[in-house]
Amino acid sequence: MPRQTPEQIATNRARYLELKAAASGRAPLVLPPPTPRDAAPPSADTVTLSETLPGGWYWTGIIRRGQVLRIANPAGTPGVSLLAWNLADTSERYNHADTIKIQWTAELRKGRVLFSDMGRVLLSIVEDSSGRHDTVVGGSTPASVARTYGADSGVRNARENFILAVGKHGLSQRDIPPCITFFAPVTVTAEGRFSFDAAGVTPGDFVSLRAEMDLILAISNTPHPLAPAVSPVPVELTIHSAPAAGPDDLCRTATAEAARGFVNTDAYLSA
Image (tube, rainbow, N blue to C red):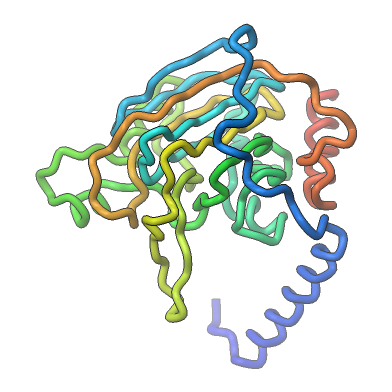
């Protein structure tokens, strides 16, 4: 593709800002504040899975539509990466770029949703005490671990964990898209470089994700590639049932783009 001129870049930026402003005008002015860390615990009689995921390891399994996955971070590990695929058609998967573009923000928090590459909603963020998540940089790799911990550290990484995870579902390396990493406060400096705000990782945070269709999930409990060198520590995974979302559900109504995503999802599931 030929390099764009400064005038073309300025024109494209102006068009982007125009569309973003139009979308923002339809969105709620204020999303809810972070969920208190002691709030919204799942009732014991609704829990179908409760596991401790050791630091450095991965988990993979199936979550059904309407169930909620809660990832709790009691010890403050700097990053838990996640991927999702449509159980009925694994060619449909989490798409980090569309999740950002469609909602006009990289600030994912309570009230936002995770889109697939087909414009449908895979997961809704229904509770979130952190609000500091990264879906731009991606998960750790052998190279990033070597840079941070040393070539012979033996520290596991998200890329290889995801390869192992998808193999259990008949998928392969080519089926692994860029991931979202929770509890990863990534910012951009004035020079345009990514920076990790280690002070933004708080022990006790959690995020709850409601499945909007039957999904395969893969979770890697490995620190974000920009996090300082730390020993990975366990996180808690809980899957529980939840009341059906009503027509005024926050995640369904927060933005016009999310509403269209749910229309697409509902049409697909009812076909």
